Image (cartoon, rainbow, N blue to C red):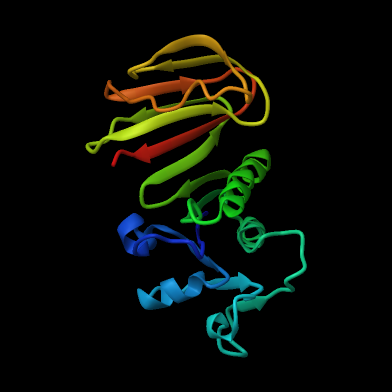
Length: 209
């Protein structure tokens, strides 16, 4: 099952970023339901503490709303992730959540790590950026528009990293969290081939200005 989690921080319309009809389960984290409502998107569930004032609270008694305390360990987005996992989701797209408050962006990147560690495919998707974790290998197609491809070690040293089909290629290289060696590459072939034998890579695709 694939799930879409809409976060409060969006820089454009939801439908401009993704096709909502492609998801089996749609969730809104906190006030993100307002953006969904504006585009006539009905989420299956809305989860949040709604701590930004009465004007962002859903109507009392809304059947698809779960209100949680402000003092909690999980972010609203993480609560949505855990709910989706309980419903059987094995592929999760977190929409938005890149930019805005830096701590929220970093929390969303760590949420990707939580998903990956539980065997769930997950990625962050925003207007100009995408991000996901990789433990293994992947082929990424070249896009019609110009995008940067950045590859970082996520939570420790990564060994035997190979990147081909790009402007800067490496084979059996080592990446470390102490130096951003893999920033701002570009896909030049039809596909970029990326693999890592030990460790987890953070893959970020950023649209050129």
